Structures are given as C-alpha cells and as structure tokens.
Length: 365
Ligand code: IMP
Ligand code: ZN
Image 1 (cartoon, rainbow, N blue to C red):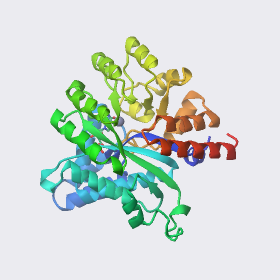
Image 2: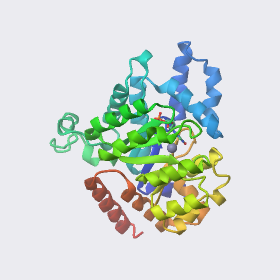
Image 3: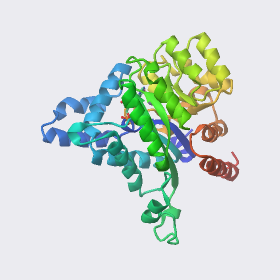
C-alpha cells in the first residue's frame, strides 16, 4: 500500500519522547551554532547525528549529545513547536508527548522553567489548530476560542490535541522524581496528564521511584512505565504488579511475566523500529506485536523517538501492515482503538471517538 495512505489516515501517538523526536536538520543547525561558539567540535558530532543504526547503549549516548544541543529555553520552545507540527502534518490527531523536565544551573534552567519553555512551544504552534488545555484567558489571548468569528482562521486549520507526560529518568534520585511529580500536578491545567518512567534500562532500580509513582497515582495522574527493554524479570514482575495504566515496549518478558501481562490487560505501547534498531528484538518476524494483536491484547503503535530512529508514525503503520499482513480496515481500527488508551480527559476521548466514527463512515472503512 502507498505511503500516502498511511499518512492520510488519522492517527494517535501515545509514546513519543520530545528530545528523541527532533528533526536531524534542527540538530545539525544547533550543532553548527555550538561549533561556531567553540562549545563543541561540529565535525565530531555531525556523523553521530546522521548515523542510523544504534545499539541501546549508543542511543543513550546520543541523548546526552542531543541534550547538550537542546537544553536552553529558546531551543526547548523551538523543538516542541517543530515536533508537534511534524506529528500534525502526518495527520496525528492526538499526541501524548513526553519529556524529562531538566535542571541546568549554567543556563538558569529549573525543571519548572524547562516545562514553561515546552508550553511556550505549544503556544507557538500556528500551522495547526492546537488544543492543549489552555486556560480561558490564554485562549482569549491566542484568539483560538473563536470569539472572533474565525478571523484568526483557526477553525479552518487541522486540529491536533496535545497532552503531556512528564518523564522521570532512571538516573535521577527519588527527590528529583518527586519534584517532577509535583510539577506535573502544578501543570495539570496546561495539559499534563501523567508520568512516565524512562531512561537507560541498565541504570538504576525502578523501585527507587515507587514512592513518587504511588504519589502520582494517589493524586490522579496516570502512569506509564518503560518495561522489559532488558531481560530483568524481577523488575518486569514488579512493574506489572504495580498495574500501570500503560507500559512501553514489553520486549523481554519470559513466560510467567508474559502470562501476567496478558491477564492484566495493561495496554502496551509498541515501537517497532525502535525495538529493531536497538536490537531489543532481533527481527520484525519474531516481534511480539503479532501475539498481542492476535489475542486482542490492548496495544498502540508508536514511534518512541522518530528523530533518533529516523521514523514517523505513518512509517510504523506501513511497517506493521506489511509485516503482519493487516489491511486498511484493521489498521484504521488500530488507530481508533488507541483513543481508548490515551490519558486525556473524557471530553477529549469522546470528541476523538466521534471524529474517528465520522471518518470511518465517510470512507466506508
Ligand atoms: P526527553 O525526555 O525529551 O529529554 O527525551 C529523551 C529522553 O527520553 C532520553 O534521555 C531517555 O531518558 C528517554 N528515552 C527515549 N527513548 C528511550 C528508550 O527507548 N528507552 C528508555 N528511555 C528512552
Ligand atoms: Zn520510550
């Protein structure tokens, strides 16, 4: 099937890391600027940015480099705007974007100001009609409430809903993780809907963060955990017992854990290209998507890091359709079902369901 088709269908993205989704062209531009200032050696990083195959360890080295390039307020704002516009332009209608709030004393950055820069990026999206839980005053300021009779043109633009998840990095301390959860709670009116645990799976113990994750849950935030990127069965069992609202990957589960996952019905965020590129799964032919799909286990196709892995959600749909023999109808249903597993408020879920129903009827899918 044509790539155009996968681009054209409405899609839902639930597992995308902000700094992993930055365009190569932006990274190169930022690297050039830092090279000119003598902060980095451009020739050293150019080939790293353009490299395509990366092991799991190399991926985390790449993130350290990306963070050097992106972690100042203006750049965080820029990449947020660009990432949202990139997803919207391939017909992602709901994007749950996750990012790790960062403190960087040398740039006068706190976790709070980092997140303000992210939200500023959302405000600057102008090519699309963005809904990210703006407060009424902000809606009025931006003019998207359309008390101006659509003079701003917002109603004629394609709409994308964006909600945010704040990530805890496994390198962090419990105290830093708590700060992230409190920040998420403070920013609920700006579209923060949950907490993610991510970072190098070979680093740290997930149990360090349990008090912060429990606190998040008690306060009504949803939780998703990167689970089973490495074959640490004790950790996998612990994570499944916690019953997060979703998990990412679920690659290295032995039989017991696999059974537990199936019984739990915890929705799984599947990132095909990411798993193959990092060698977490040896080939698409043996990917657990097939098992989950055939047993109707809740699953969502996602990109993980569209920049780092040179992919897009449309490409992931094309890959899944080809590899698992799924047709247009099945793939459309997959996109539609993803709405159910989003962490958005009921009103948004119901608007999205109506939207998918309309498209389904229009195209007799
Ligand atoms: P950020 O949170 O916006 O800075 O996005 C990049 C960060 O997401 C990385 O530094 C990791 O902590 C996390 N991340 C991205 N991809 C992966 C993955 O495949 N496994 C675990 N963590 C990841
Ligand atoms: Zn991830």
